[in-house]
Image (cartoon, rainbow, N blue to C red; front, side):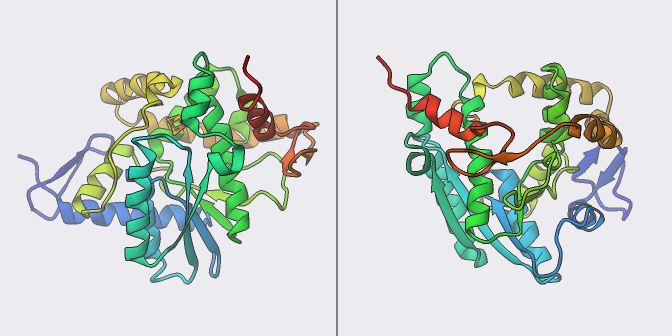
Length: 306
Ligand code: SF4
């Protein structure tokens, strides 16, 4: 049987690099890659105030732990923000886990809810708009509230737990929906605005499977439950398709993300031409039209139903 390079029994096999690793060397590789991603992409600078988008699921909980560890060597502040969409039987459980972990690690934790900010819970939005895919409304609202709340807690960076699989799925979704302009602004907004808090994704080159293995090995508390509305999402089909490709052709996920990084400058050059940013006439946040996507969504979901 193949062994880890140290001679120990392996715990993990990484098929894209044909490496067998014992627990100790898997954790070492994971931490090293995490720090290299932060360093090579200049994600966090000394004295930054980093707000982590903390859902309570495995990705954000592993990110919380890895950032708390990094903080021991690099002086920066860490706070956590949870967006409560108002999904009964799901979100209250993840908030409980997120809160408890923040207390344990001494990280200040803030919760912002759709109900308070947008006037409706996600459950109410779904029941009023049963023909729509819930995630299309939810995604717009969460992205907006994360950015605005990060600013409200004086964060200089907004860290999210997106992993390699999430990145590969988002890229393929935008290609299959013929939305290359969205690809161009995947890593940063097309135009700069002081109201955009810079987003960072320190797990962007870490496969989802490895995040899950790391969480188990490090005994990190997390909530494994999935959002009940996730089954409606287009993302589910893409995930299945990419996972099948990865199984047959190891390294596919890395290649999808690397392809975008190669094309990014050309895409940004093409789609930045003529792009304009003004303030949304309702909320004042940066927007490319009179009303930003969030205000349009909130207006739609609060419309009078006959
Ligand atoms: Fe929102 Fe969809 Fe995610 Fe559920 S799966 S939290 S509805 S975006």
